[in-house]
Image: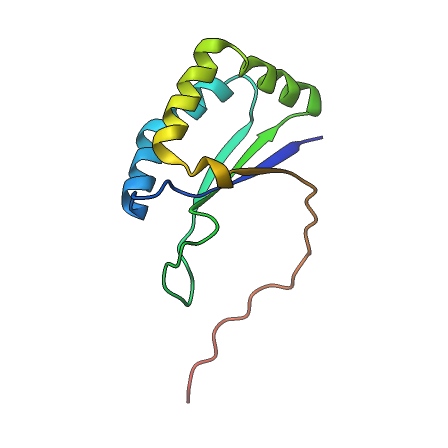
Length: 125
């Protein structure tokens, strides 16, 4: 049974959305790929942009998802993060990137609805 974790992160003060995405994708994601290798089966970053309003300090700049094949593997992954070198590498980069006071992680219980096929858009006559 797949275990999914969902994390919500906000960028640190003074960092633009563009700087945040650039650093996350070129530095932080590479660290994540390295430390998750052998444990996680999926690592996805979903960068958010306010919809229908100005950027007013949104609660999240990125929603990150990690999938593990099972709970045992997930626990082994978190145990591996206790290695002082790995912990320091992650903490140092998180300090450059995130508002640590707002970091949240959730265990996901996913439910999916089956929807009918999408209809083609109506064309004006």
